[in-house]
Amino acid sequence: MRKICPARISAWLLLIAFSLPLATQGAEVLDSSVKQQHGRYMMHSESVVQAPVSKVRALLMDYENFLRLNPDIKRVEPMEHLDGGGTRMGVSSSLCIAVVCLHFDWVQDVRLLPRGDIAVTIVPNRGDFRKGNSRWRLLANGGGTRLIFDADLTPNQWFPPLIGSWMMKQKLYEEASEIAHGLERMAISNCC
Image (cartoon, rainbow, N blue to C red; front, side):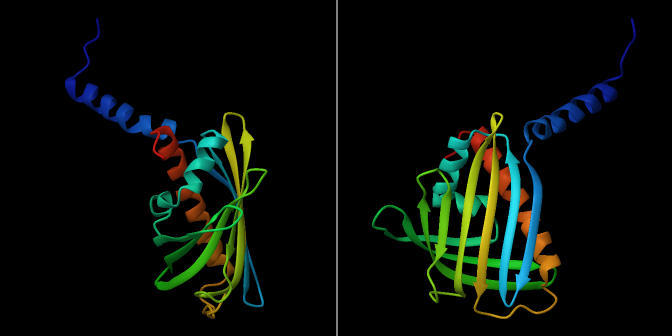
């Protein structure tokens, strides 16, 4: 019988222990893009989350989760319920790319659409955006969810050339990954 030294057993146990969380985290970003045209930013990302659509939708519709899903979101404050459903909320965020950090405040209306998409409309000129809208589409993907995010934003302020489309794309990719992994973690832990 072969004898295995205690140090080697400990090393294998540590390797297994550290690998387990990675095996359960299957979230992945499939695509992200940012286009800038005349001060307007059009953003797109697609991710796959290993959690059912109903759970992912519930997590996204609970505004208290935004702070845990995206570290750039600093404040989400419900302001009023809208006629026909939905919620108006005030949001604050900080966007840091490389050494440049920008702070944004805005008011947005969030609605769950009849087909299950989540629509966000920025209230014009009630913050740092002239206008904007975004949509989360959630599609069944096996036992998981394909999460498609599209946004069209026009900020009030000018972005320095340093923060061009390439850097915004990198930031969008990071955020899409953080959100997808966060949704998956929260869904697995039954947090909602």
